[in-house]
Length: 329
Image (cartoon, rainbow, N blue to C red; front, side, top):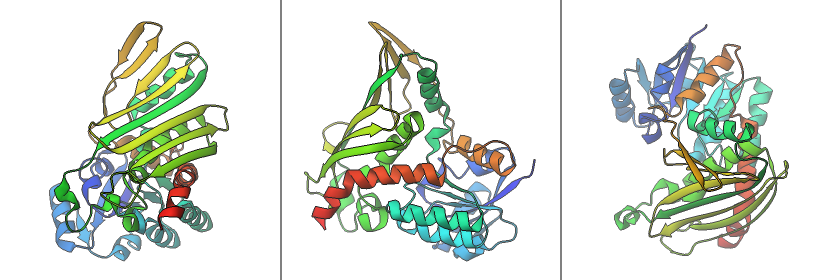
């Protein structure tokens, strides 16, 4: 098995625990270099994580002869540019989510990688995470019977007021993130629903900003119809008095409840009986998907989160936010 040598562009919060260490811990994988525009921070990351070298110029990663594939862990507004540059250099790409600022960017990224003949994967790591695979397996095994409908709900308290003094957090700066907390976070849930039920074919949605603390959406309601026939509804509110995150898949003979963001047990309801199924997340949640990518690069199987699957999620996000974006410009 060939060792895949990775370069990482961007080494901020997501790379500290969720993703970065996974590139060194996956079998047949090695993180050989990291880049951040602030060289001191790149050097600090490399020192703390035992990475052989660091750079403050992305080209040093993209064009390095000893780097086989590139992980892009920057803010969303740079994903397309870096992906196109990696593709032109013939480097396979693993890019963070959201894949791009909108669906059109995602299409450009896919086309560039296809033209260059390099694979493109996106960081929707729940497609390979054991807890979420258990949800899929329970549905596939008929634990709840035929799926009737799906409910998605996320309530989140506003961050402390001091976070909105001066420069706003990047997640609510649409110029850098593409939207607000919904755009940056709810895509994980929507992408996993695509993993379970296939592509969405119809979207009806309303989005608004009710709290007025920042400009992007803070309340979203949506109904979806998948091509498979499954129907879903969701409510996401980021200005409530409580944090709550639960998804419910309702079947003909039972229900499954699980959380996108909280590592709590899956709950299987059948009549009045409730079964809790605990599946622990690994320390570095990207690692199972990284392993699948490394395996694919070695000719063993296929990783489940591709540019094509992520672009479908981007299309759904665009459809949900279309009216809000048109009226808030």
